[in-house]
Amino acid sequence: MDRERAIRALREAGCPKNVIEHCLAVERTALSIAKKISSNGHKIDLWLVSLGGLLHDIGRSRTHGIEHGIEGGKILRRLGLGDLAPFAERHIGSGIPADEAKELGLPARDFIPETLEEKVVTYADKLVNKNKRGTYRQALKWFKSNLGPEHPALDRFKRLHEEIQSLMKNKRQFQETAH
Picture (cartoon, rainbow, N blue to C red):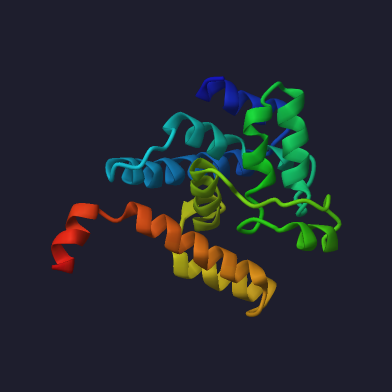
């Protein structure tokens, strides 16, 4: 799978132009984050981040509801891209645990990003509003206003933010300022 084929898969699945623009923005944001993480000596597959960023919302060709992640996983498996299905399934919110998934009418299993690549794409998706990159504070404000200030997704998003930020910090710079 190459980048152009991934974009073609979005079109062929029936994703509207605005969803494709969003996916391109998520890919750019995720790659920017991933390159910073990589430059700090962490192992991350940039190609997988690119494809995951592009295809994470392919399920929006069928629905814009929370189940678009599940639909996206099904589409990617039908296309023979099962290794990319977790990017679609696990990016919703900042991941959804099995008990919450069941309450939401999703299959009762964990939809929490596991790999570093999945976490980067999930985080980038939360930073991108439509096709524009925003800030963590803006994304957090969105979560609070749309889900409520006590929703468990806020804590998951905060933890994801902290993990990504710690990986992006320049270790040498951190060590120099710590002394």
